[in-house]
Image 1 (tube, one colour):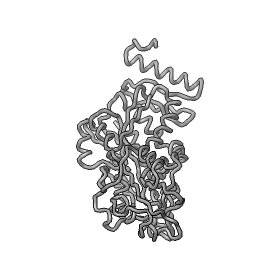
Image 2 (cartoon, one colour; image 1 turned 90 degrees about the vertical axis):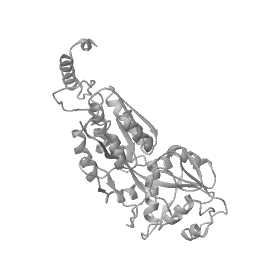
Image 3 (cartoon, rainbow, N blue to C red; image 1 turned 180 degrees about the horizontal axis):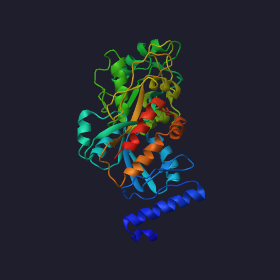
Image 4 (cartoon, rainbow, N blue to C red; image 1 turned 60 degrees about the horizontal axis):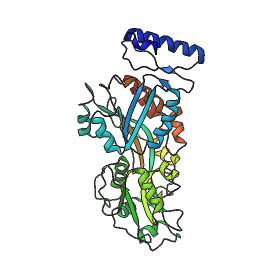
Length: 376
C-alpha cells in the first residue's frame, strides 16, 4: 500500500482520510491500523453496529464453555472488520488463565473469576495494572444423560453429588427412583463422565454441589475434578461426545453442547414448587438476581447456586474475559476493545441467545460497557 513507507504521523493522517472517504461512500468504516496514536479517535460504527479499530491478530484462549459463542462472534466481527483476525483456542479455563499470565494471549476466557493468587500473577504482564474479570457469556451447566427408555429425569444436589462421587452406582438406586416416580429406571451401572482438564464448568458444578448437597459433596469448589471414580474426557465437546456414545451415561456440559449433540438434560429439584428444566429462560431468572462481587473495574459476579425460586435454574455459569485493566499491549489494545465492545452489545448477546446461551441482563452489560473504554 502506498502509505506504508510514510512516517507514522503521515500514515495516520492518510488512514483517517481513507476512513472518512469510506464513510461517505458506503456508510461503513472499519479501521485497519494498530499504530498507536496520541490523539484518541472514536471507533467507527458499521451498519452491523460493530466497531472496528486496529488490525492484525487478536489471540485468546481458555474456556470451552464459550467456544460456540466465540465462533458466532468471530464470524460476524471478521465480516465487518477484515483487518482483525480473532483466534481463540480452547483448552479449558485453567489453561487460558495460564496463557494470559504468561503473556501469550490478549484475553483469556474463564468460567470462574480470578483467584487472589491469579490476580497477583497477572501483574507481571499487566504493566502498572492487573487482570480483571469481565462477564461476557452467560450459560448453564446441563446434567446430560443417555439412559435407554428414560426421556425425563429429575435429580437434586445430594443425588448428583453421590452419582459423580461413585456412591450411587445404579440407575434404579432408591434415591434416583424417589425423585422420578413412575419412571422405569434400568438396573444398569451408571457411567459417569467428568472433565479431564482444569475447567470453569467443573468449578461451577462443584460450587453448586457444595451449596446444595448437604455435605454429600465433600470437596471444595474447584476447576480440578476431585470426585472418585468415573471416566474423563477433554473439554465440553469431549464430554458431550462420550455421553452421546456411551449407554447409561451421565455428564455435565453447557446447554449449547447439549443442544448441538441432541442430548437430554435433567431437571433439577431445588425446593421450588416444581423441578426446574435446564433452559436458557430458567437460567435467566437466576442471572437476574446476580450481584457484582468484584471491586473497581473487576466485575466478578456472585451467583446463587442454592436458589429455590420458582423457575430459576441453579447450575449456572458465566464466562469472564480476563484482560488487563492497565498495561495491555499497545499493538493489540485497539482490536481488543473493538472486539469486546461488540461481544457485550445487545446484538451480540441476542445472537448467542439463539444458540443455547443466556443474554446477560442489562444491569450487568451496562457495567461492562462502561469498563471497556477505560482499558489502557
